[in-house]
Image 1 (tube, rainbow, N blue to C red):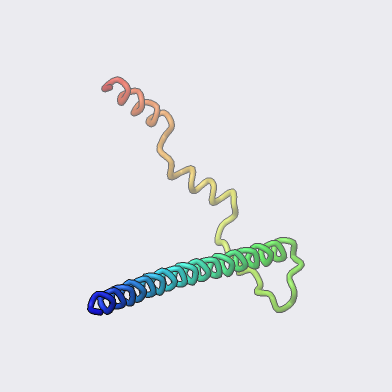
Image 2: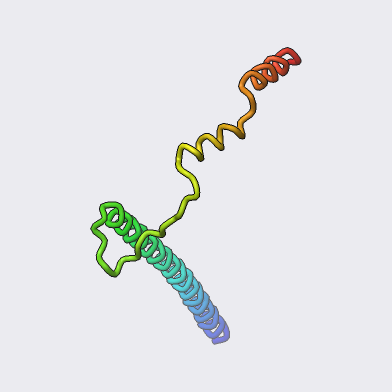
Length: 109
């Protein structure tokens, strides 16, 4: 009689341990699937935002944007493109000096 009681206790404990293991497995599986779904939803939203921005840019570039679309910001320039290029070129070092510096550097190597 004592052996049967112990056997039933052991079976009950084993059964409860298996149920606990299955609950743990199901819980971790649900959490993993939930995290994957959330990541997919974030990626889909990001993709849609990118597509929307791209299409809005295309409309803006094609100048077919509807009246409610934001207008492109207007930037006022104080100089022409040629003046800007000339100013940038003046900032560059003398080409002959650059060549001499490069030759001196190569000599040191």
